[in-house]
Length: 214
Image 1 (cartoon, rainbow, N blue to C red):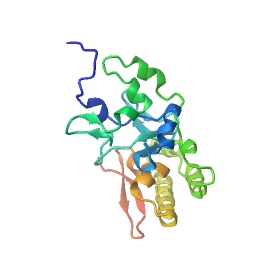
Image 2 (cartoon, rainbow, N blue to C red):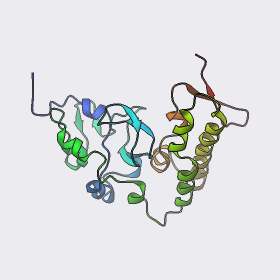
Image 3 (spheres, helix red, strand yellow):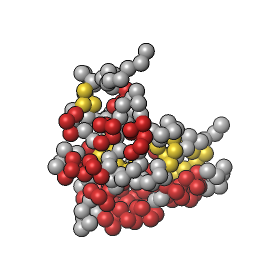
Image 4 (cartoon, rainbow, N blue to C red):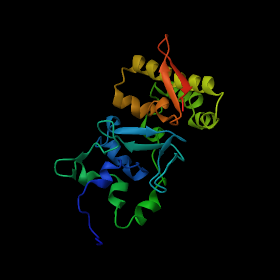
């Protein structure tokens, strides 16, 4: 059976909120989409690709709508009646998405996307921490190390703990809540480690990376 209109099944919304584009900036400026609604996907972070439907490194920094309850289900999706809480102000990708014909969405994926620099004021005092984080906690470096079969655990551990340390400093300095942290810094890097690697806390409260036993 074929169809050419939305059936309000909710599948698209449960697969994840949209990536934001320049055209969506007015939603941020009008506070329809606030920082608490957004999560940053950092460059080269392993994420689900809507083009290949595989987990792949993000080609650039991306801003997405957050999920709910530890899932990627869009936070504006209303499960009880399977509708959108901001339907008349929904982002560009939501307007473009037609599950029966994904061509329009595929043409705009990763094109003219927003980053934190578009949203955070240049004089915001959090920028020195963000720039340090971008320099010392790069996913490109983490991915390179994680591809090695063994012997890189100490270097990976350093990156993971640098990531946690700068987050804690920002929480102390700026009293960030979890939603704000996920926008400013993205998800903690240890959550993006490949399945063969795991972390455990040490006596100092830091994390140690190790290979799982097969």
